[in-house]
Length: 147
Image (cartoon, rainbow, N blue to C red):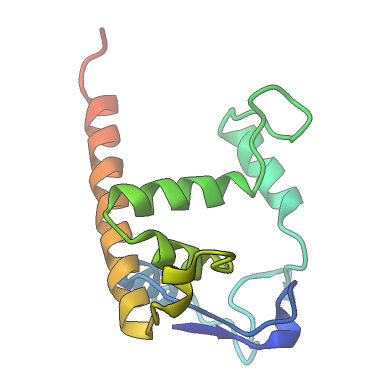
C-alpha cells in the first residue's frame, strides 16, 4: 500500500493507494537511488511536474498531446483508462471510487459500505490481471501479419 499524508495530497486528505504486485516488482528492480525518499529522479532531483516528460513521451510515441488538440492526450486520461479497466475487471463501483480518491457523494449504500485495505488490494490485483490480458492481446495482434 502507498500511504500519502494529508499535506502530500491536493485535497489535504490522507490517502491509501493499493499497489499491484506487477508494479511492486517493477519498482524493486529499479536501480538504487541512494538515500533519496523519492522513487523517480531526473538528474538527481525529484519530479515536481510530469507534463514535460509526458509531452516528450507522446512525441516519441507519435501520440497527439494536449487538452486543446483534437484527440489530444493528457495525464488525466490515465484516470479514464484506470476506471474502465477496473469496471471491466469486475471491481465494485465504490471500490473504484475509493482507489481513485472520489467521495461517495450522495450514494448512501457506498457511504456505509466500509472498504478495507484488503478490498483495495484485491481490486488492484483484478485490474492488473485485466490490463495484462488486454496488453497481451494487443501485442499478439500487432505481432500477427496485418490485413
